[in-house]
Image (tube, rainbow, N blue to C red; front, top):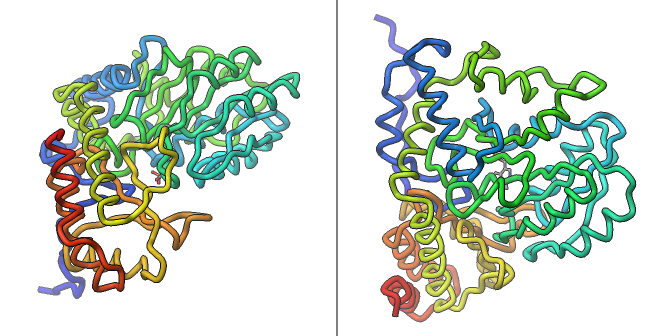
Length: 395
Ligand SMILES: Cc1ncc(COP(=O)(O)O)c(C=O)c1O
């Protein structure tokens, strides 16, 4: 018998306190062992309908169509852009982090005239700056914003900017890759026309699916365009036909990933949206208390901190990559590096979905208490864990 020379898979189980993917819920892994069947079969259609209905609950929408694209978070945003924008359309997009820049570039590649409203990294965008820009333009097709800027750990309020978009006749586009499932996303109340997320963050599923919600208004705009969209695969109205009542074939959807999402959403609804969001807040506050007790500083705007991602300044003289490597190799904990203008300057600690637990954040703090002095940064021994434990106990 010929034996292949490739080693067996041998990946360690780690505590994923990075910006994603994060730890997958055991119920989700179990769901992925469900037998694969055809995408149009009567036994599979209830899974599709169930996902759409559960997404609508988590997106808090009764008005929008909900579905999960066979693609990662980036493609979720790009699908919306490519389906709506035609060459020469005006898109006004907030610019306050790495993923804002990505959205801006995506709109440009559709041939749109993209106007950026520039803010500061690690701070939210001032709605007055958006209003001032919108007033300069007669016709704006869309206003784009990132809800949870993973590169800076800032949560961007959306309702006021969405109201402005409506007043100017523009569609409101939102990247909710990091917020969805970990903090409130109220699509109908905030008046969002297109919003997109990803399966590997607060949903605690493997990467590969992009949940989206599309308003009737956005769908009408997509259907009434005068040019064909640049994309066939990511054209939202065609994908919506599979997720709609007739389940018209578009492409072979990733069956096992959809089982995972189905179960991931059931886990969320079992916990309850309110308790889940509170858990994310409580654990992030405890982590911050612990980090600050070690003399480390959290760089995001104090009043707009994201529970999902905590951005921490790397102390002077500490080799940031070596600390991450020690965490990964010696403690089996992953955290993330800084991106763009924050590269080399910060670490980003994620507490999302299944990974957002008191036990995980205490583990990280105790590991940092051991590693940082070895890397030349003295910390008061035990202070981080003590401060975080106190915060978790609510005292
Ligand atoms: C805010 C935000 N937008 C978009 C993306 C891109 O998602 P993906 O890597 O799944 O394509 C990410 C990924 O981290 C993100 O954090």
